Image (cartoon, rainbow, N blue to C red; front, side, top):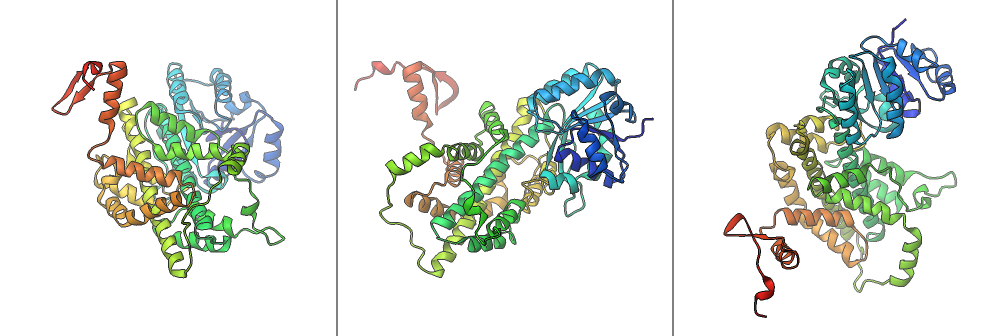
Length: 478
């Protein structure tokens, strides 16, 4: 008998937690896993005493679903998704719905949405953010795809999603085709930049200000009580307070080689493909790659190691307080630039794909439940609510005022890092972008001249834009 409101394929921790979340909200869920012993284990343990239905085959799984059937996949992105789709489709009927909740590339989701529509199957690709805890108690959900599916999944998704302080669910329809996974990709790229910015703030506090772990924990705790309040700032404070049973700090024993799953790289590549300079995200990806080059870094440290002529001296409480304040300013200003670039990439979706994404709604989706959730996103939503046609966040009066207040400290921090051989790639990239976007004359006229000189690529003149000309540069006297 078909009695499940929705089905879940994939019972890793994220899948299990989303299922338990749905159960808590009164929905009946069927579950299936390729390794069927995991279904039995889940039903007998985490799902014991619930209305969750365990199934031992895809046929049984599909038969357990109410029409239109809603089957959600939480499996590894890539071929595994296509494999499950190919097995599911023969068992489904026109109007049934397949939902991919993994970290799929938006182009794959775009393709699947189009292919399945021809067979009458409604396909949805949804971003899910918040990690294991978010999945269990309220994630940020970013669904997009075939719009006919939304009325059927909306009650479930908005019930289980995190809620903003206003009570609104951190879930809404993003748009057609691969838009949901596109929004999630940009989210993950911003997450990379946020994490690198916080890491650079830590690096400066430790090696420029010579703060100890308990002091750094206190700094982040205080920062989390103001405009920088966010999940990542909060957990950073907890990390610096965490001690092993012997009293030592765990943070000091973790190898400085950052891993990645590729979603930040996808965002950087997407920016390059569509002419959007997401420089902070790209630098954050490069920083992780550089951190993993342990052997090369060790060799370079021996060969290239130098001592700054005039190292920064944190010789008094007043200087220490000033340094903390300056790093706070650099972090806040750089964070604004990071989001400005991310939202530029979201805006580009209209020109590239015809997806007119609601930027204010996306800010709300990210306001709770997700990894980049922060107080700051409320200001972004307000900016786009006031001016839906805002061309760039940096031009919003609120953010302009913040940048004006932070600029002096931001510049000092980048200078301190350079003068004291402490790398600040994302702080520096943010400042360079900010200076570049407001610079009235960039040196690109020289680049155009060089391109025309060696490759006859032509250029426009200031007195006649839109007309391209070529000059025989070798014919001029030197």
